[in-house]
Image (cartoon, rainbow over all chains, first blue to last red; front, side, top):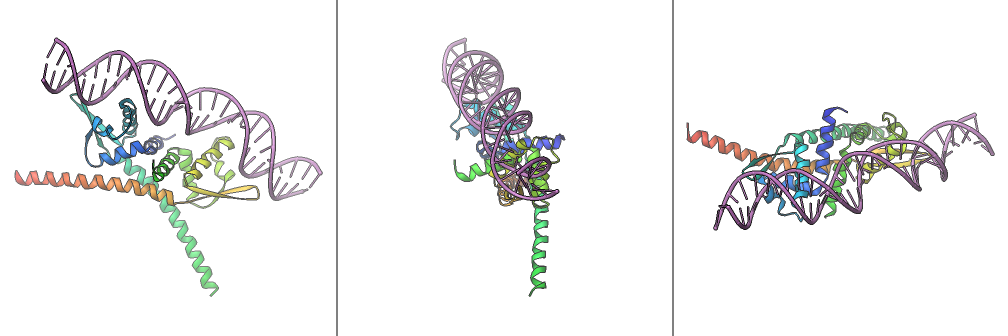
Length: 112
Length: 112
DNA sequence: CATTTCATTAGGCATTTACCTAAGTATCAG
DNA sequence: CTGATACTTAGGTAAATGCCTAATGAAATG
């Protein structure tokens, strides 16, 4: 399997969980420390850390540790790549559907 | 958990597997019977069926059976919804980053 | 320096996922 | 009606996922 595909696997998998999506949503507003990020979730910290590791492995966020606090920030490139994938395939579908519309129009015109 | 979120869970999960993404890619070119769709994959048919059921449960495709053949077609609404989610959060991030750019420009201007 | 705080590691558990083979069921073709 | 074709169901396995508690590390603070 090409590496690019594995990357999409990881990105879409990371986004398939609402806890992780909420983290992405909060990080869109700026870099945030782990404890602060975790606070809204009713979840043990080690469980939350696992989610952060999934996001980091997918390349959706990165983190750096200063003293004892780890600060996460969003890294948008992979989000953009995933969006491109969707956009590309949606547009192929739309092009096909437009052809179908044309065909319907053609039918109507030929049978007025 | 709100229903909308569960739906995003299912859509992103469905897209997190390259076999399923390839199916979406092929279906973008038109409705296709199951056996035809399965043919490129080195996989037992029951395994392939499971993938199709994941895609269908996510609302990314629908299917109808005529005689003994089941034909799948793409159903783009959920793909669009997922794209919207990504677009929304990407734009929040971009807005924030633009503020940061402005701040950098401001710094440069105040220290020429 | 003792304590608290923030983060991590280790280990365990139930469920889901991604595959498989074997054995159906239903339709079509001759 | 008989065989081939197209799918479906049933049941099994190994690995991954999503959660937990308990224990440990390592930095900050009184």
